Amino acid sequence: MTDRMDINRLLLEMRSLKSQTSAFSGIAKPEHLGGIGAVAPTGGPKFGDVFAQAVNKVNDVQKAATNLSEAYVRGDSKVDISEVMIASQKASVSFAAMTQVRNKLVDAYKDVMNMPV
Image (cartoon, rainbow, N blue to C red; front, side):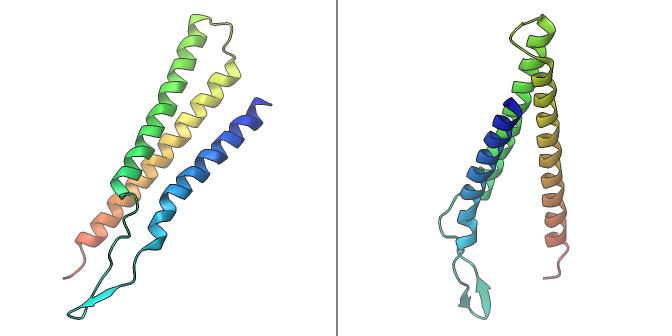
């Protein structure tokens, strides 16, 4: 039953992140300035802020997993090994996903920097 609640909570968090980033889909139409198309942001959340929130969320998940594992090692009777393993896997998956996003951002940056002007 706790697995079902964890999945529902994860889905809720994913939906809230999607709603935060959906502001990026409403970018204004290009304005032609001297033949160059310029795209103006609509005042939504900045990419750096959204990325920082994601990094902080991963950090929180890792801290929670560490706290659970330390509590289990201390012998806390309220902590079950399955909770520890699930928290550990969540931390591992979230860190791997963040690493992949970072790698894609670095690749995109390299592609932009190698574009001819």
